[in-house]
Image 1 (tube, each protein chain N blue to C red):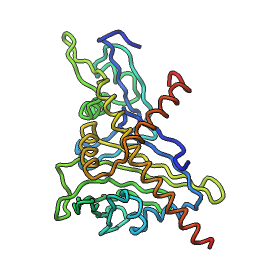
Image 2 (spheres, each protein chain N blue to C red):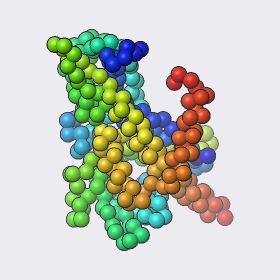
Image 3 (cartoon, rainbow over the protein chains, first blue to last red):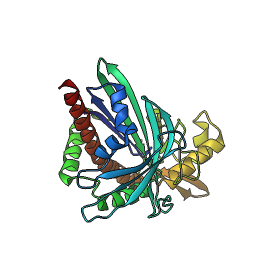
Length: 173
Length: 124
C-alpha cells in the first residue's frame, strides 16, 4: 500500500495524503521535475496529460493539456510558487483558455508537496491539496468529472467504508 | 457543546488562513499546521477575538474568509451578530474531499508504477 495516511479537514478545506516509495527522494522528485514522467501519472490512461511548458522555478509556469477519448483537449496550468529540489514544491493549479491564458472564471486549487527520506532507500511524499471554498471544490470537481479525471465510483465507496472503520476504531475523533 | 439552534461553533484556525482577498487567484495557507478550536456559546467577533492571541482585525479577517468559503455564517441574534458554523457546508466539503482523495490515490498509484518500473530497469 503506497498511500500510508489520508487526512481530510473540512474546516480548512484541505486534503493531505502521505505516500511511501521504495526509492530515493531524488527519484521521487523526478516524478514532478521531469515533464515526461509527470505526463505519465497526472492524468488517467483514458485522459492523458501533455506538458507543453515546464518552468519549475518560483514564479514559473507549467502548462499542460489533457486529451480525452473524444479528442477534446482542455488546457490547464500551474503557477509555481515555491521549489526546493528534491524536498518541496508548492503550486497553484488552474484551468486555461484555448489560447493558454488563465481562465479567471474558474477557481484554482493549491498543492504543497513535501518529500523526505525516512530510511535507507525509502521516501515519504506528503501532498496537501487546499481549496478556496466549497463552491470552488464543486466547480473544479464538475470539470474534473467531465474530463474523466476521477475514477470508478466503487473506489469512493471503498474509501467511505474505510472511513467508517476508522471512526469505529477511534471513537470521538 | 450544543444547545440546539443557538449553538455557535467557530473553528478559528490559529495558523494563517488564506490571507489574500483575491482567493481565487492565489491564496496562501499552511493547513498542516492548522489547529482548530471549537467555541461554544453565542459569540460575536469581539468575544471570539478575546479567546485568541491575535487582534480583533485578524479574527475578523479569518471569519470573513471562513464566511466566503461557506463554512460559517453571520446571523443576527437580537441586537447582535453572531458567527455560526455552517454544518451543511462542512458536510459538503467533507464529501468533496472524498472525491479529491480518489483522484490523488489514482495519481499516486501511477507514480508508484513509474518508480517501480524505473527500479526494475535499473536492476536489470
